[in-house]
Image (cartoon, rainbow, N blue to C red; front, top):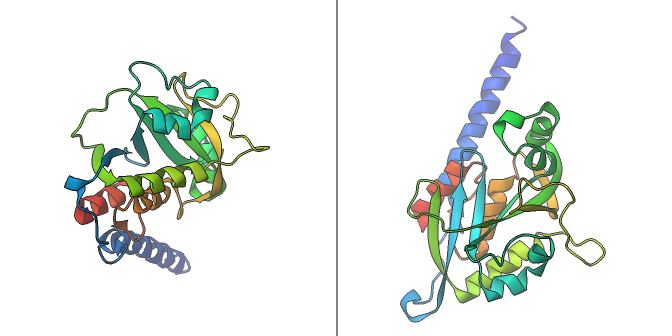
Length: 226
């Protein structure tokens, strides 16, 4: 039967993807633990990893240092100086799907296709108040100052300046607290939002899986190796 060969190929592709995702979760990156300084004797910074079924974000505390590091957030109109503001949240993703799909009810065919193939990338920045811990969707980590600075530098380098300035993309926010910005790199199904989060966390000195395309893969590897 002619139809059997395409079906076998489809099954083989799905099986290969599943095996790759499992291996990407179970094989740590870096492969061997890196020696760490005594956290009890050093200053630490708390960061959060926020997850939902398809996406992960990184939250860093709002303080004088982060406001000075990302001044364009306030310049874009984000309420970073609100008395109840506690966290800056950053996520990276495909431009069309990320911007045009604030809720599942607003899912459209073209952004979905781009999200499953290749698209330009953006960074979504948001402001949050208190975030409840512990939670199934929140994982907290204490990292040293050097690793924290590496994380901030990675996030900052992910933005794309336009004419020497980093400015929000006009008319793209979900609401008054968030903004979208042009980002470096191309988004694809294999190199997506969760692999960006994983790379950022490795810059912060944490171990992730070797390849984490899904939130469950990333959060599982974080709990295994940290």
